[in-house]
Image (cartoon, rainbow, N blue to C red; front, side):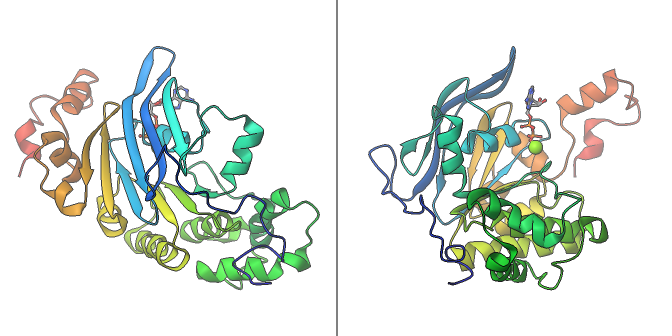
Length: 296
Ligand SMILES: Nc1ncnc2c1ncn2[C@@H]1O[C@H](COP(=O)(O)OP(=O)(O)O)[C@@H](O)[C@H]1O
Ligand SMILES: [Mg+2]
C-alpha cells in the first residue's frame, strides 16, 4: 500500500484516464461549449466556451456576482446548463444521471466557499469522510497512513485529533484541502481559497496550490478576485464579465490587456457602472467621489 495511490490497496474502479476522444484535444481535461446559464430570467453565463488544460492551473477572475462559482459548478455539473455542453476527458457529462456523475466527481477534489469542515468531526475524521463514502466499510486503521500523508502535504500532520473550532482560518482551509485530495483527484477546483485570509496565510495557500500541481500533477482551477494570488498560481487567467469571457491569457497578457474593464478590475478601481449604482443608493455622494478620484 502506498499512501498516495489507492486507498489501502483498494483500487479505485474508475481511475483509468480515458484518452480524449473526438470531443476533446488530448491536453484538454474539461471543456464547456456554448454554455448558457439562466436562473429564472436572470442570465448569468452567456454562451461561454472554454477549455481547461490538463496539468495546468487556470485562474478565473471577475467581479463579485459575475458567475465564477456558477461556471465552476458546471465543471462537475453541480449545476446543469440551461444550454450548452460540458465535457470531461472528452466525454460529455452534463446529461449524465446523478449516480453516473458521482463517479465522475470522485476524480475531482473541490474546495468550495461554502464547503466548510464538519465541526463535529476531528480533522482526521473530516479527511476520512470522502474515503468512507467511496469505500464503504473502511476502518480508521486502514486509512490512518493516508490521512497522515494528506495532512503532511498541507503541513498539518499532527493535527489529526484537533477539531475545526481549534484551528485558525488558514489551517481550516488547509484541512479542507487535505480532504479535497483524499481520493487522489485528477482535478482540484478551488473557489476563493484565499478569501478572508491575511496576506501571509493567503500566500501559504498559493504555495500549496503550486505544490499540489507540481507534486501530484493535478489540473487546477482557481476562482479568485485576489490578483496577487491569480498572478502567482495561474498558468492562464480568464476574466469573466457580464456572463462572458473578456480576457484569456497568461499574467502578462492580462496585465497589458487593453480592455478598460480588465484594467479597472486588476488595478482594484471602481468602475463607472459601480459608481453610478453607489450614487443612486446614496452610498457615495456625487460631489465626493468622481471617477478621476479612482484613476492614477
Ligand atoms: N442557485 C442559484 N439560484 C439563483 N441565482 C443564483 C444561484 N446561484 C448563483 N446565482 C446568481 O448568479 C450570479 C452569479 O453568482 P456566482 O457565480 O456565485 O458569482 P461569483 O462570480 O461571485 O462567484 C449571481 O447574481 C447569483 O446571485
Ligand atoms: Mg463565487
